[in-house]
Length: 275
View (tube, rainbow, N blue to C red):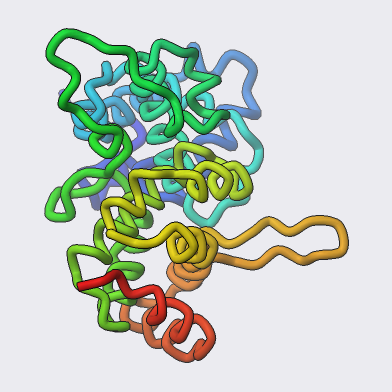
């Protein structure tokens, strides 16, 4: 007899594989003491998470159990219940945790330090046979033709790349810029921290053959700023894209909306890397 617990009769995937299904399950589990240990659907969710992020774990060389633990911690926060894309929140948290664990091992530091500090300026400990590996190999995302772990992350990156290409960026440069900045932004898990890291970064501008001042401006336009007392924050390109997509806009509609921003168009066009 097949166990259909937690599954939508009209689908092959469990009900919690959808954003609304996950939200409903998390509400029930959080409202019932001991549910995470005893509820069969909680076990099914753990198994599903392990399978869902298996490819991401292989990419970073991590055990799938680490993804399950990171996902579990992400699911405990109340903020996930109010998110329009709870699976997107989980994916970002899992990716950040895997990156931090990988970089902590590579640099022989704690995962907390890898997540909170600018590790791009750290000298990597010398290991036999490891001297030819560069930091970009650590932080770059998977190749563009691979299936990403999160549909929302995939769409946001795809729109950002296509938008830059529409502004006459060379596709390879657009892809490199988006992947590199996006990966560091996720690892930092904070706008201000990501900007501090990236503005001092040496690898990104080298990959794009871009002067430091242009690189810092590109980073500012992509991730925005959180603002401070008396100074309002400003949404970066990534945040604007995600908001449009979460609001139901298609990728093409999102690009058209961005193309209405003359200031953004001029700023990004002036940052075109040298051919």
